[in-house]
Image (cartoon, rainbow, N blue to C red; front, top):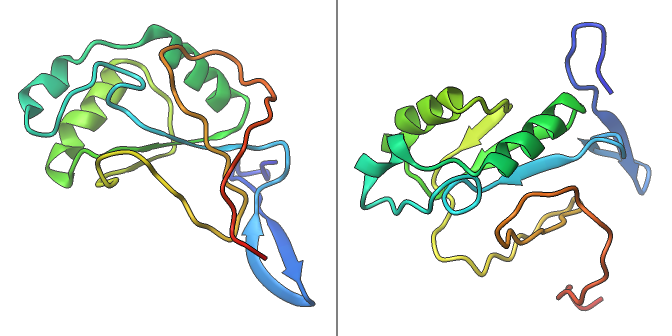
Length: 144
């Protein structure tokens, strides 16, 4: 939900009678998307000279820009380091990606366990961007 200025409107949240961090409306998703091996060729940080010419995954561009146009939040979260920011921003722009943010320095190596007080949904990229579908899976949770 956006206000008159086109800014995203967060919803105030209350838990146990106390105000907590605001949340997005249910219909808005907050996508955190990897870059290397997810939207383009998998380029290791040790070979930054390849980043400017990485091959684009066209289905990623189309899907991500559709999500952006639908009002979802698009943030790229990459293991590339700060010294790769300019080449990364230039590549995203040159290839036509619309996005809201770019976070550098994601820990390398995978096997991510994201712990947060907000809902986190993980979707493993396996080679092709498509519309998301509902699917049940086993997850690890904290013992109550």
